Length: 191
Image (cartoon, rainbow, N blue to C red; front, side):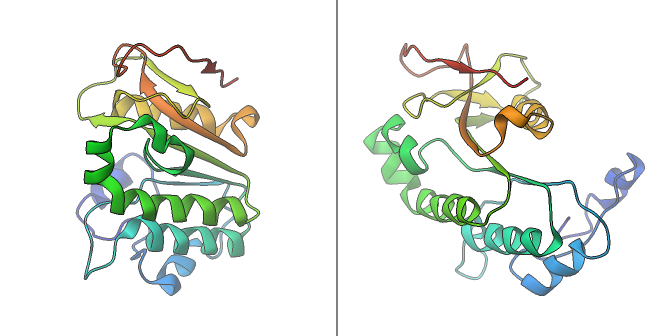
């Protein structure tokens, strides 16, 4: 689902069926999910406010509500380290900078958990836009923080998509070589 036509042709060339909808408009989101059996929804919605509202909660809430109505089998929500109980992983300076968006992401996580959908919540650390390193790992430890490349997050999301072990889990995603500090943590194994 795209809000704008900009990357539609590129996605369709890969064999992806594209629906145009605005996540702020529940009716268009529901219409995008009508008619076909949907195995999974993966959302990375977030970003700058649009007309005073952040998409981190409202856009994701509308997707979650539409997914419930459509009988979606699995819902993967990508938020951020610092959301929910992982607030302990961030410095006071980071929390001051990200505070408002983390509140919205937390509301989206809580809405998903309460929805009854089978879900996986993935909280990546600081994002880098470089090629995948293959060093991305998941953990249930909310104290872990670090950086990770977007491409590695995408690989971890795909692994969780097909993993029953990841069902109804909240996982932090970091690059094992880009940790902040030297915390020991247990890696979550996606089978």
